[in-house]
Length: 112
Image 1 (cartoon, rainbow, N blue to C red):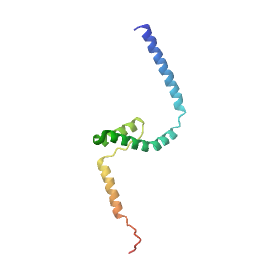
Image 2 (tube, rainbow, N blue to C red):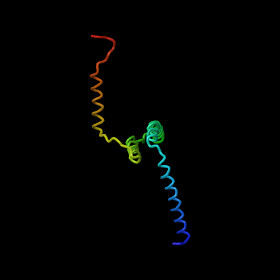
Image 3 (cartoon, rainbow, N blue to C red):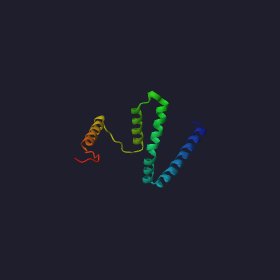
Image 4 (cartoon, rainbow, N blue to C red):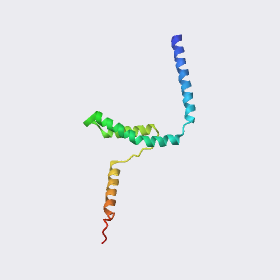
C-alpha cells in the first residue's frame, strides 16, 4: 500500500471518529419523549401524503401490501413496537364491532 493511500485512509477514519464522537455528544442532549411525541404528531399526515404520491406514481400497480411491509420495516428500524395481527384477528374484531352495533339500542326519540 502506498504512503499516500495509508495517510488518506487514516485521515478518513480520524474524521469519521470525530464525527461519531460529536454525534454521541448530541445524543445526550436529545429529549426522547419530545421526539416520540413529535413523531406521533407528524407521522399520520406524512404517511397519508406519501401514500397519495405512491398511488399517483404507480397507478393500478400500487400494492398496499408492500406499503404495509415498508411501514413495518421502518417501525422495526426505529425500534418501535409493531402489532402483529393476522387477517383472522382483523375479521374477528370487525365481526365483534358489527355485533355490538346491532345489539346497541337506538334512540330515535320514540319510547315503547
